[in-house]
Length: 85
Image 1 (cartoon, rainbow, N blue to C red):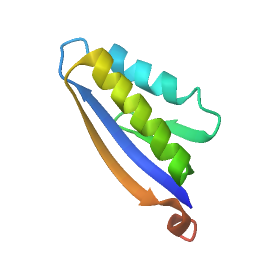
Image 2 (image 1 turned 180 degrees about the vertical axis):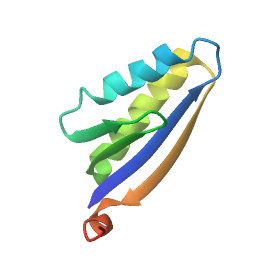
Image 3 (image 1 turned 60 degrees about the vertical axis):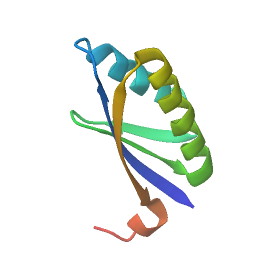
């Protein structure tokens, strides 16, 4: 089963761009997921369980490195999106 996740990261500090960029850069190192970044969010897609494991690890790492940060996530069944136009 495919997963599509829409993620926005809001670090709760004044210098917020470097932690966001670091999170996106780390996601881009995984060949098993596809990452598409826009100005307000990042779309991550791939097989359901591996993608969720990657996101969990990288979100935890961000919290450990940044401290307080908010992740806003939407998770969609990617299999059901293939018929949409």
